[in-house]
Length: 218
Image 1 (cartoon, rainbow, N blue to C red):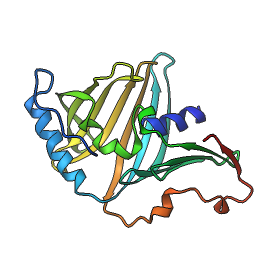
Image 2: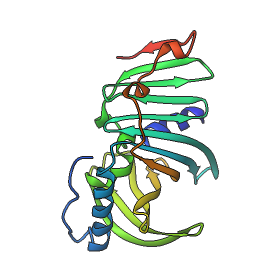
Image 3: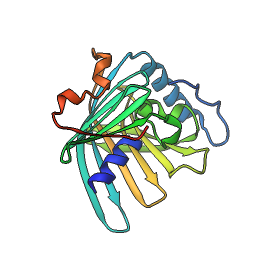
Image 4: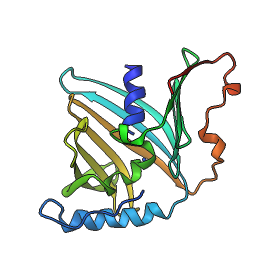
């Protein structure tokens, strides 16, 4: 399950193409919400977000929950979770496993990912049809729900739901419905825009992990 968390945390985890015009599958309410979000997120130079991820298997009636922190700056990102860290400088991706003191090094290919962590907060901008799907209550907050359907039917998931805090104009939660029956839900507990992050923070430094085993898959 730890490996599952690693893969889902990377591929399923918060900036370029405009949102498609309204069609019969893209209503005006969801379009207005997403356009407003896009304008806000594009004004940020960097982002730090604390999150919890819950992976639920409906068929097996099991779930696993973990927390972590995402740092994002342009196409660079870093994800820190218990026992694992993922670094990406936009060209190379390093996946570090603490219990094995091992790091896997690969070329970064955004197209090979179902969901790119560097675009988690703007996932809706390209490759989806969208529609407004009502409201849900999250604690004391009421969230507007927008349902996204990928245009590419070869994706590993068939639906994404965004929970949007309209007053704060931020994505509060995201659920990814995979074809294998898993439902992965991310809840953003703290969001900090425009944090000062040095580019070196997105690169793995073996000196920080004495004795680390490097597996170069490039």
